[in-house]
Length: 366
Ligand code: ADP
Ligand code: MG
Image (cartoon, rainbow, N blue to C red; front, side, top):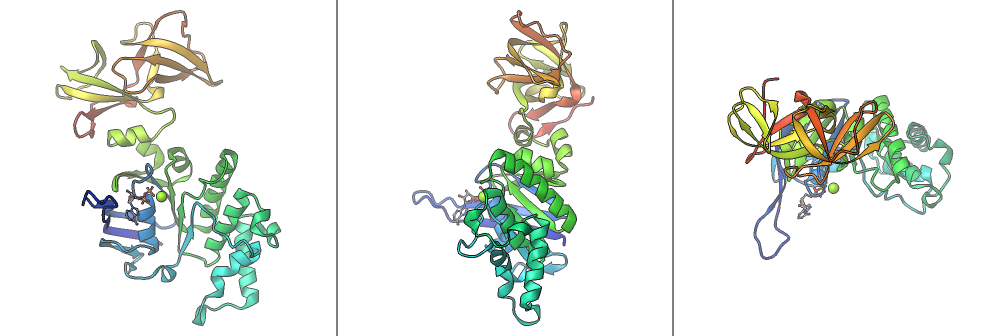
């Protein structure tokens, strides 16, 4: 089921009694979510991710705009009639019910032609439980399960009504690091098996990048960029997106363009054809540096971290916003750690320029 959002906006009155300034939690969302894909909705805490999800599920009403599931306008439809499955950060299972009873619960209130027999409900619950691989645990109570298993029950409970759309709000946040990794791969598999259109909310860029067919990056209620994870990483449209994606993060410098050359401090570090003279932000991905004795860009060397396949060269520069510059180079690279400085050549396609005021990307010919 494809989802179409048209000018979708949600405003909240100010919580602060002194200021009347309202909060625009979701600002003018206007895009399509393709059928059968896993979409990562990504942004820092407080940027409006949960509000966006709540609007799509019907738990909250928009201030303006419309929501379509396929061709159907569902804007005024209550959540129970939208055919959505919801999973939240807290699993919210019924402690006194078994796993099976928890999964069956949403089916018990079905009315009219949707009403199921007991056998049908049990069969559906078993199918959902198999999908998330907890069918061996049907008779247990929630407190006899690990966090990861409890979250699987919550996912099975969301799947049991055969939803057209699955909405997951930071579903892995309560799991420890190892389980988080494992469960996110499971989620990917379940989505691929069921082909249910899924929106996965997270503030963790790595999590979103690793499992999403497409990511939507948002900041303060406003969508910044939509695209395949790799495309957004390779071609960020503004400084926020460039900084939000990538571990280690992009290195950001204050620079300037003069005569189609990019300067950081007094060094001309790269040719940037067709860019007008101006002060500029320069973002360089960690993998954008090559150690070269005669390289044009010099930083003060702090140390080298060996990571097996790669090494991370750690250095500093007065015009860098990051505390340390991290450059990832291949393990064969020779770095003379007795020296005070290290010099680099830059890979042009890993260097991004951003307007000093608007922070929008400025492209140069490579
Ligand atoms: P996220 O899920 O990305 O952390 P939220 O959608 O929860 O963000 O919140 C987005 C913004 O809307 C925040 O500034 C938050 O304080 C505000 N907000 C959320 N819900 C309400 C509400 N019920 N009343 C007032 N403000 C709210
Ligand atoms: Mg949230």
